[in-house]
Length: 243
Image 1: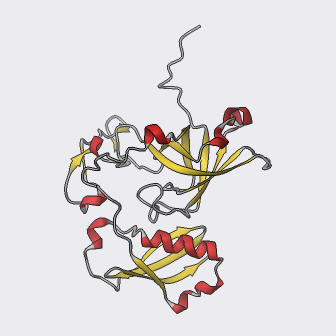
Image 2: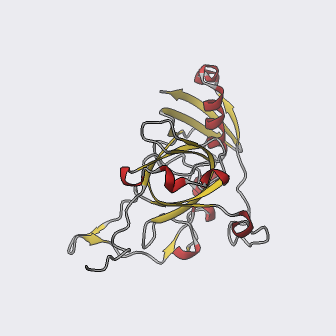
Image 3: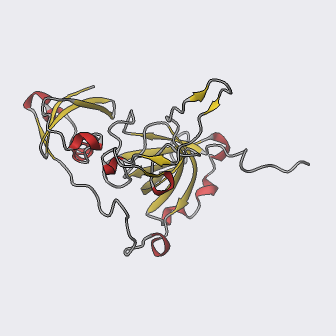
């Protein structure tokens, strides 16, 4: 029997359903929006409760995933993916300064793999497609393919004295208010909080965050709602929320 090459046989074990319907608006790091939820449904081949035995004892998980919405340009002469670039422009540096791709969490990498530490809320064993993992603190778009999950180990994974390079601390958050025309009183309290926390994390491109253009509107999809907002200084005003 021929040996199986694990590199060429990697395939998703499941798919993540999340509250974010498009890339814009997704938090840039896990845990920044605690209310951001996700549900991991396993592919039929991995839909086995025995594979999760013992997982309920952990509070957090590492998700290994694919950046499936990266659209890499093709080389027209070879029809292959364009050569990866060693330098990227991280949003945290305003989108102007370049650093090495391996010194960043940029989704545009030689291999489109990412990792995210999220909270395990519960394991649903009653759903027809069970088991399903209920997660929070998500920073991934709806439909993200999951390659693997691993439990988070506080004694090994939490390093309080680690140095954060060009991103030593979490970015400042915006103060969020609602325009009366947005009719936020009609929303469930949990959804309203999710929207506010997402906008407070300021999903705008970093190069726009220093520009004062309060007339400019931004938009994203959260739980199927089209959220529109503007920013003036450190205050974000939610203008509309339509399903």
